[in-house]
Image (tube, rainbow, N blue to C red; front, side):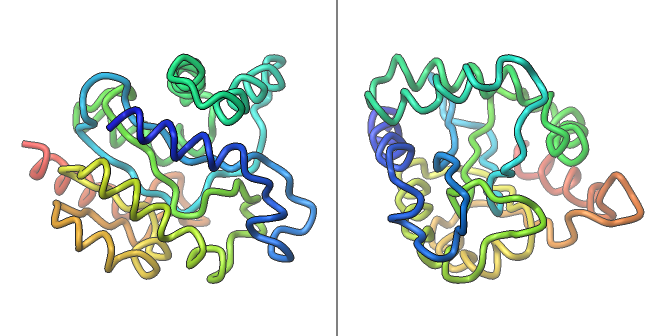
Length: 207
């Protein structure tokens, strides 16, 4: 499973965004992000998100991190995937999105960062002020399907109603426990009003 995931991901990382998305991306030339899965055991929890955030980390090592990530696409090797995966796990707490919307829930349900898989519906990192359009979601849906069929996750946490509206059918085909967070961010609160329900449902499904 891991070998095939690495192969699919490397093909995406190596893809020219302009060739894949054409006019939809403007000047965006960030490398596509396939997502990540654990190296050894199947994930306890699979997070399906809308799209990767195009903001960069405010750390001096960002350019080096990006270069190591792109090497996964260049070589397709397990070794380079492992480097990219370890970088992702290590830098996760630095991302504002993770700190605001994910960290608390993982802590409450007792799931470690190394026990999750992350699969974005749209693979191109986009700025929050210019999210993917419907055409991009349709374009990348088959890729998400291939990843989910390969992974066969037991519990899926869907982050945002846009993802479920676009890919709910294929998620249901997987026939696993699905927790949908329809009201994700609010302008007046640092936490989603659905957080207590998400925690309760994930605890129930994870056992």
